[in-house]
Length: 405
Ligand SMILES: Cc1ncc(COP(=O)(O)O)c(C=O)c1O
Image 1 (tube, rainbow, N blue to C red):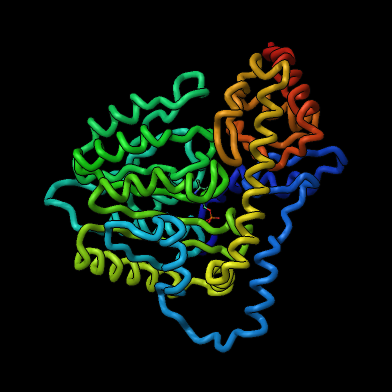
Image 2: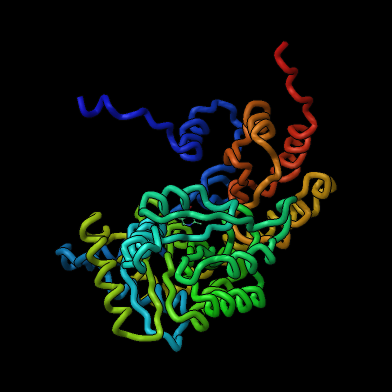
């Protein structure tokens, strides 16, 4: 029996929490686990700009004929503009992908299938950890060899920029390196503009290949500000791949919207890379789904809808900034290692807590954080910040369980 020869696989520990939270009858339960934006009431509403764009699409959609493996070209051009700005000195190309994950996977496949010098072994990607839990499965499954190094110092509260520079020095020319564009998942610890510029120059000098994961543009400092890092990289490094997710920024999670952007100094090699990416997409899933990308395109084509969407995104960011400030200002923040939260960016922070604390938060307080201690700050209403900090403090103070005799 073919099916029976499979080993049973555990559920993804983070996604399994979705079901656990739903089944938890405690009314005060707090879901700070899965990375979706929530408003003060704990809801993830459809954005008003999205609703308006959907209404326009329903009324005016003329055809649902196939678009091809690269998907909606106008959507891609709008996303390239959002990420790279109106004028980049580079040639650019883009294709629609199945979310940011699909873009990362396509990028990784491109790196893996790119012919390497004889005897060079599998293509390598350098990954700063901790990182988003799906990076390793996506890259490994695509056939890349993964090497890791530390994103933060030992306490986890600050960037270890010297580790980044050391790895750029140690890596082999031609190796890929993953950089999160902004709102680092899970730490919230981003590069400064000066660090981006230094890193970009060193990466270019060393001949490394940067793959940027940009899933939270607009959640850090603002739409333009959050793109300064990736733009610095694009201007300094000859070729880049950029995996963009629109699922957080447009609240389109289940519609699976994303794009894979490519930049290069010359048009002809870029065209070859695009042709290969389209071939890979054709073999994997043929073509991406249309609806979500059409929604994003409709918003970005309209000045009015773009303004509405930007205001909604700005409000989401403002709420996150407020939550961060409230936690960092709490009298227990320093003891709990939370004082730096106000300087960090985006939806996430990482508690220095072990599994025991995470488990206690769940069992005793119905507070769900990701198994690695990552907190989705968007899930925390301002009215519950004090409660959260107090519960966290008592979870830390709880006595160790007695060792079995
Ligand atoms: C850092 C990072 N990259 C990429 C993604 C992919 O998002 P999606 O595939 O939903 O667009 C996520 C989602 O959580 C993420 O946190």
